Length: 316
Image (cartoon, rainbow, N blue to C red; front, side, top):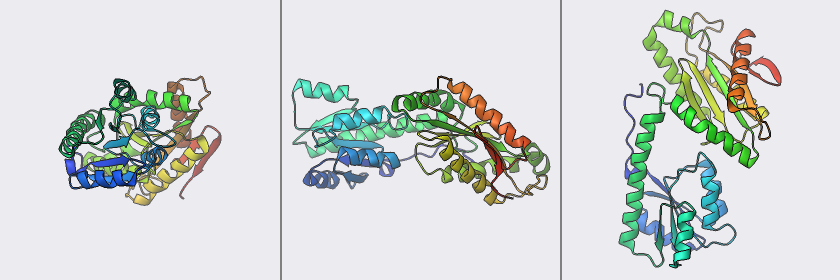
């Protein structure tokens, strides 16, 4: 039930995104690599970014010269996004000049292959970079994943929250935080025991993660029964919709809690939003979310409080 070991992914579990405006090249690349790794192909830089908004490929194999947005521009855009900056990119280019190769490295790629490419070399380079990515992901999971709940931990919060804040300021987007904890959790542990308490947190964390609709939205276990949802590119009104969905998700788990007013496990949540033109620190935003969480507890629990709205119950 609990996270006793980090799941080890293999090469066959990886996903490769192929970006090339020529249909023949996409077909050839999929034919060469499709037996080794799952592949998705798109025909433009814009389509690649749209795909990465909804998915996180393990590796991108991308043509440099494409109409509209070229490969260098796509790479730069991904590097500026904290949740996408770690995706390795291999460029495919027909130009072999020192200047062109230098530009590939400057764009942040991990490697490049030249056209016409050698099939054996291409397969082995893709394989090598995917194996490196698997090892890196395993190490990061050991560092950043909470072993009980599978949510991110405080190490992740400390390392990545400042990145999300900087990205919001750069892209002129708001960053919202939803801080929540389990209502009357001490009573739950006292009545049912700590093993059942751990089981409750695991079930709750899994359900909340499944309720988040975007890969960029992150669930962090701050400590004990307290969790934080990081919502990049999200204003306060949209954050309230997410918080309402989280409250309803936990309520509908229907985990019995005899010492709660609702006879089941519920949560209380506080929302705070940092606008891109806000000079306040991210610590101030966290403190505001914490104050709103305690306001929610003071107003009856099983509710959400934002900075601009009084508490309201999602379920009665």
